[in-house]
Image (tube, rainbow, N blue to C red):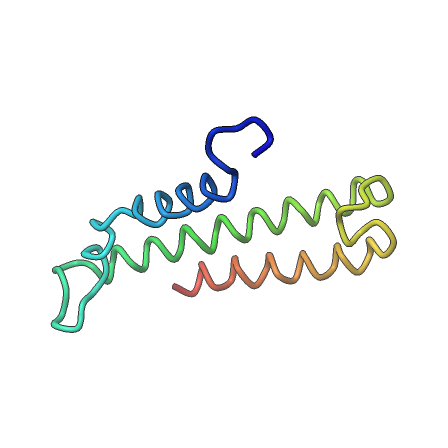
Length: 104
């Protein structure tokens, strides 16, 4: 037991169950249902997807800039050894997400 009252695996199990139970059930009614859903919910869904694509595109663009600015100093990134390819791939991914947001 290593001097603890409750073993760590039980704490992890309890925290995992609390995490599963803490999901907000109100989110279930914000999207369209089989019967047609709440009026105006498709606009809400479109706005949410646009914001999601913009945020993911911005994060991809930020990581592309980091790949360009610090090419050899971070071993956690793909850009440690081949930073040019990493920069190109992240810029393409960022452009794709911005395009998806614009097309919605």
